[in-house]
Length: 304
Image 1 (cartoon, helix red, strand yellow):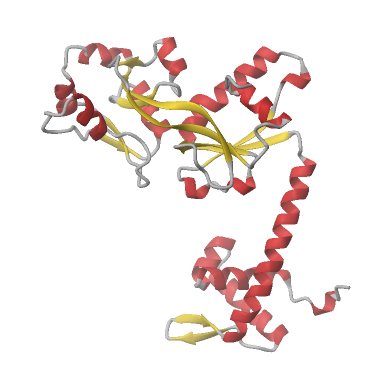
Image 2: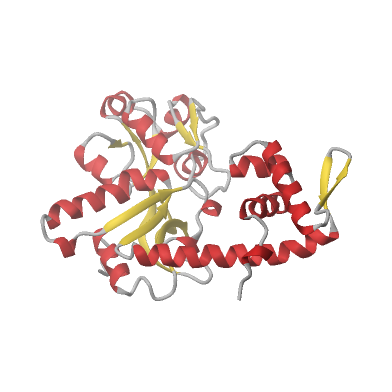
């Protein structure tokens, strides 16, 4: 039986957990969206409640004590269990709502249009539609596969502990707005690389093809590559291409609708290709279950 009078204040526990895990009162305050004095106050309250020092000052830095080391193990285990139980109940309460994680550009130009198109096609047939919550992140490290129903990620199909289905193979072509494409149609690959205007996608994780890859495949003798514009988001790169700001490298499957409608024009008939691609990733067995099959159908996957 839990004796509530033995429990310290939950707000103080949260402050302690953040301070210990992040190694800083300042970073803990930022994570919990409060001022540092509030964090210091909660730590003092907790120390008074426990009758023990949890942090000691060493110059400008507060270091956890041996008692804090011992206490943190129990705190982390308890909060982790509480978070997991809460997550399960929330998902049970919203069992008809699927949570899908992916990159912003894929969500904007591929996932959301397909979900909307399927909804329009289904019309008023309630059981043919699918309620989805789409969350986005730039980096794979910021997508917690254990916290979503499925994710659309880029890679070779291998995610240890999870299953995947290939949605789009990596086939990349340079694309531009119709007006800019007309201006550039007489340029050679080397001239295009030298003169641009090119839109570069900066990716610290080095996941996707770059203009350097395109140069090595189609213009190995080109001596320079234009650096007109650099962005950090594929969706932004495609949007800038739509606005006529330059030439971007676009994934054929992702921008198929834009190419078909003519608002973007491919400047090459030969794509850069690799065995990689965008995959739907989920826990073992989920993709073959009712929800997984419905999602694959909504996304137009042939196996569905």
